[in-house]
Length: 348
Image 1 (cartoon, one colour):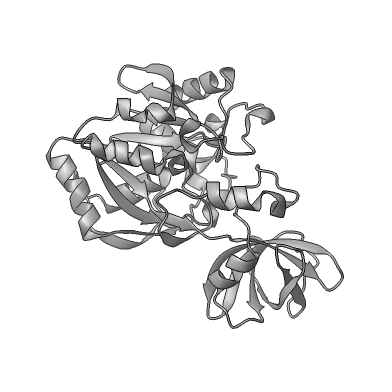
Image 2: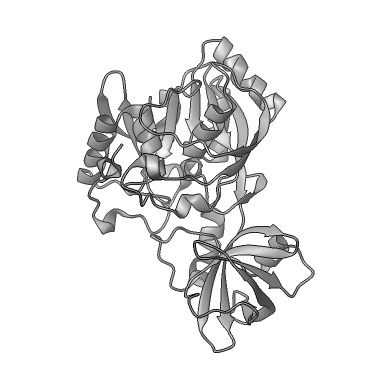
């Protein structure tokens, strides 16, 4: 499939720079696939579209404050994104890294822009990635708890990340986040509140938790002319026996499996064997594109995605490319807010 078919025009002013004032206050565009009908609603009304016996599948990954600031000995400022830790070394992405050399030392900065500790540049990797060795006995997550910021995507501008730190560290995280390890939020879940989840349970809708740690591939656009030419990064996932049973019981009882976010879809479809979920864990590099046969996902709650992205390809596979582009055109015309901090769709 030509990647250009996933393109659409979006005025920059519709890219949400901050979350809505209330978590569940976002708008929600509902797309009924079978009837080919669109209508406008709000996320606070989500229960009206759910039925007793349905199962809501959520991704309980927890975002770590993976964005950090550093400085070279020359005084040049660097921005980094932590990816993973291996043998006391961090794999990171570094901006303004063309002049950095293996063997030099940089300073990791705290949120007051003061030196926290030094770090040696160990190895240059591909795709702008590096291995660095922080001069601290603490684990990466402990250091990042002291110096890191929410790893917002590049289209959310934070020239001074400390000024919005409290907002972002709270709102770029789902209320049900438990398993630490993501470097990007499963943003469809950002709209839920504890009260709304209680309303959902009270209506007789089960909630199953899966985990997929969103990785660096989230930030990478499709650069190839065709989707077939793009290699998607693998990400760690898990579904335990208890939550697999919750999903399978709902299926057997005739309920719908409603995935909250594209990360949940990828996890469910990775673990599916026919119309059944198998408890499992590992790495998934499942790339869902138009033509994919969904096994367990019946409905999808999802934010609006970037043009020519793997996430838009997944949504187009689920709802049909023409219907999705029509829905996105409607969202633009009605000034919905787009991307991570923006409004959402409910595709049924």
